[in-house]
Length: 515
Image (cartoon, rainbow, N blue to C red):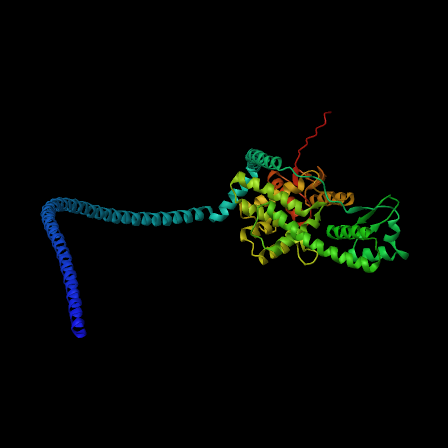
């Protein structure tokens, strides 16, 4: 009984499960059918869009074909027009080429004709030269003189007969041109000097060191004078200690030594320890300081003149010029002043400013080492410039500024002119009375050494030599030669600042007594 019940229950459960599965299968089938229908609908829509797109593509293809046909047609027309233009251009070029060929042929014919004419001219010149030579030979045979002898004789006769007239004409022309040139030169130099105003004070040969009290003088002298002796030996200057209150004097012609001595003395006075060992230490240190200052002075001068291409070693040598003088004039200040004046002159006449400025700054560079190296300051300066590869144009200015060699460039003349302007201006230089008197005597003696000179006077502070000559020995032509010879001898034998004018005067006096 129980087994039957179990079977019945199992059958009922199986039926229920089968019915559930059938219901679910039916629902799934219905869902799938709906989805399939939806996909088919979308597919039909896509097919419709595809058909529309194909129709549009065909229409676009037809339109593109029509447009392409139109473009091809226009291109063919343009190509045809271009071809016609090219044909016309080729025709014109052919015509021009023919014309050029004809012109070339005509030029060749003319060149041939000119060459033939030149040959004819050369032949005529040769015939004329031969005829002239024969004619000259015939004249020489008749006159019993060669051409050179006839010229010499004719010149001698003309010199004797017309010497005074020629001399006067030469003087007139020279004076006219001289007045014009001098006026232009004076205006030019005056303008340059006016535009550049500089100090006129000259360097002294002594330096005053102020003392905090007169008691310090005893320390400076030291026991038995050993401190002052050691100081003078180390610095190479003289220390003058007199009754002047609150000061001592450092004397010496070397600016660098005096400057080292001044710095060292001020250092020792401030320190208070003055004894030989300390003096040696301080002086050595001050020499190193001054060496650094020389480089700074050189850099400052180059910077002021806008020069940037000089090496450091050359700038140091330039800075040493700050401690050198010429007739009391500081050479570095003189060189910078020259450079400024030279720049203005170069601007006025159109010369190279850079060459002039560098030439002026370096013109006396040899004086920085002339006490250490043998030779004139010009020779030493040229060697220094070559060592540091200074431009050849600048080296020429340095070599020619005292006319040791001929001046070949406008820049060299400007450097020499600026040197004369800077050295000759009032207050720039000075010299002792003995040297001044000696220079005047030498000028007069040089002038009197020439034959025919009666008297000679140095005037205008030695800027002019006035020479009176014997009219019986010196004529007008010889007067010109004598002035040049005296000037040349002064240049060769004497040393002088600035420019010296030689004025030769020839007077004729007629004295008649009435009885």
